[in-house]
Length: 394
Image (spheres, rainbow, N blue to C red):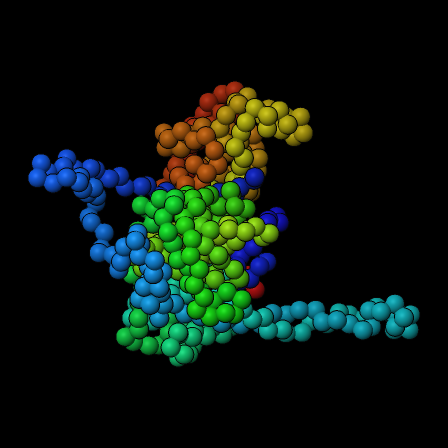
């Protein structure tokens, strides 16, 4: 299925069943001390690390962040060999009159691309996007100080677009990681990367929104709730850090919408860090999988489906199954086209995003209890998630 999403390096709703829930910590305001004039806002959770600076009243706050963490942002060059069909002069009708149809020839071709990344450990572990290094035969990492290293892919996860690579070096500069669960729209952010081959480029803006579902931005094959920013992101920024005013990474820049301006998206750092740890430990990440395609049901959609597909849908609300993959966990459990999911593990669901989050947060092999409506009857169905089959590029 074609989409208008352009992944920043290798550029190129019905949703297949993911995403992660990002709760927001609340703040509790203390009563003012009678001897003071200003109340103090105190977080319920542990206090945040002391900021490198305060952005308010400091016109050079971006400069200070870049000076502090810029050396830990790297350029990643990747090359992979693909077989492509070479132009064949004998395909011209003039030559075909004499030689007939000759078999086409495939030749190896090297495809190159550049992206960004950031160092998370002094011994050379680097976070970047999966699509930056997917299928790469050669990965080269260049530091801001000019040093170049061969990179080794420790693991990649196309479902969240996160990868970890390793270089043989020690005592490297690193970037502190922040907490993407407490982000608020309007906060200032800074992006550092290598767009269009222009190394060490800095842009700034604000957080435009949080919790953008993958389906909302046209990336239904991903399982991420994205941070939206208006900081300029261009091809080559993929895998670079999105930073807060303390110089902490709060997201990994990953995608733009083709033809749009001021619409960039980043993977929340809590998601990238969780996936990165699994990749370092196991070299892969298994995501729960049911094997269904679904749409959010509305009265208008119900009417069109009944007219065009002939499905007998009796509910006006819920999540409608329009396809069940053969031999999948959903098929084994007896789910059918036309079933309407109303709750999962006693949690009501009203749209596909809620189903995705509950499935992504489930455990492989542990049954999910689905309440469905089928032909006007309410039924309980237990579905045991399996590891998501992943088709890799190349």
